[in-house]
Length: 420
Image 1: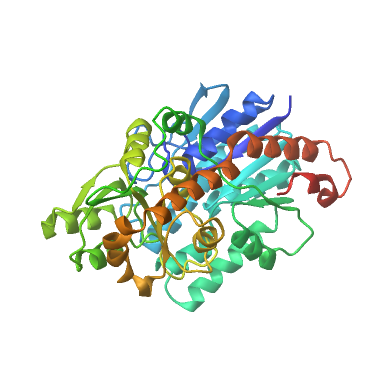
Image 2: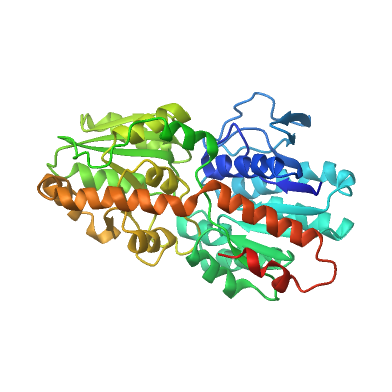
């Protein structure tokens, strides 16, 4: 039974920021015969609040679906958009995890998730101490995202953060990431011969079951008014408020439900309340049964990605929209991971930020083009199969087993069969 240590900042019950995927991978690997230990923070995301009331110095240990979970305290920023607070946040997780270093010997491999460089730093220290192979899973190029979102201002600060990111990444023997654009970006950072695996995210099992339990809505025409849904993290990387402000300037008929939390959620909520525009409603993060129902009722699932984010991330929530058969209405740079996904799979319309005036026109005309709308529904369903849970986790499991038994064989050769 291979012994795997996973280091990540968010884990069940946190679902935002990839928490649902990270948790599901741990459960899936346990199902496949791995002895999995997860070291994570206490639940706090995307609300940026201590949701358990136990965040602090105490280390909490318990079992969750066969996974050994260890929770460590972390500093939760009051202002997640402050560079200083984000640096303290990163450092606090690194320092908190240091207490577990004496317990690092009993693992065959370590997997660490980025965006938290503090977690990556601890994983590197663990590798130096015990010589266990280190797998880096890049969900978010944190230095790039910090620059794009405005958290890191100034060219000098951006260069320093990118240099730290590059050095940390290159300490790992195996890399993986979740989109072709991010793979290409990582190839520019890689300084050695590390295998670079394309392993996309997927729809976590529990949400997939909730969506599958609802009736198929293929062929259902859009409602009058058109129902829009945004559900997920609301931070600087989404730039959701800008989208809402542009949409409100039109006379288009729509009903836009916004559900979420995060660093910019308060600003969006305040704006919705201040406008008095009945076309917009705002509420908190949806639990999975309610999210599945909201997706089923929606005509378009809105996903926005701040201009300039480049290859830094791709929204996980895209997959839940696809699985529900809901056309995606995306606003993103064409060259971004989300933009490339929209162009390749065509699950709905995608607009650049300088094309926002076209969105109301689409909403007004969509009832006159039922064939196009039905094609978007079909394309969403078809693309969802690519993100099947079992196939991706099987590849993770196979690659991990090959990694721990590689001995002195070249890793690129050993792991080549597990790339997409």
